[in-house]
Length: 288
Image 1 (cartoon, rainbow, N blue to C red):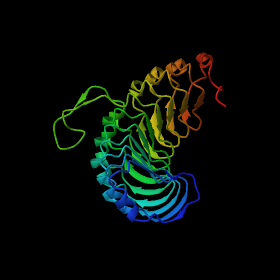
Image 2: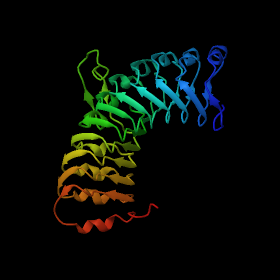
Image 3: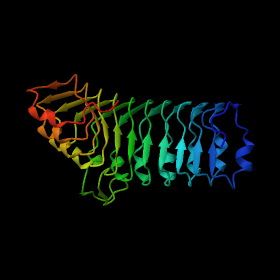
């Protein structure tokens, strides 16, 4: 590891071929390295951790990164990487637990093959230029604890699979349709989707995400009511639903969230009166 230094220039390509057999971690985080993304990293087939974040690498992510079938952690954030995320990452890196590529210039859609990453715990692709709909196969990633896709241009509705329980589908070649039992993201602690172009309703079974601690859906176009099942999220500490198109009265179940420290509902079309039950939110304001 050479992280957090003042190293600059390009990475010599022969490093990867010479270290290919033994290297399990390559970490040059927080330096001044530049040049096109080092495609010769494909030779590091025993690599488990690759950290190139917070540098000045440019170009696109090569599809040959899919050769690193033993990779568990991939950190590429805060570079000048553009283009799409290669589908090979989702079809080949099946041991991946952390995928973190934020603050870059990635474009295109999120490939539905992401459902193959069954061991994924952290999915962080925030502050890019990704678009299209969120793939239903996200619901297959039952080990996910953190999903941070904020500040992109995702559209459409939230896939029902994220909060689904006991859904069986007919067989097909689609990763979401393989007679599989989908249990949703029950381990999810953080869900950040703010500043996108999402629409439709907040799933009425959002309450199935019992471990959720933070829910950020603000600055989208969600409509209709806040589902009453939100009252089941008893571990929720932060709830941001501002700047949407939510209407109707506040569900009284919302005030059962006694761990809630931050609540933002401004700039919606909510109606009715402030209920007396708001006094039950005794943790509001505790977060500095």
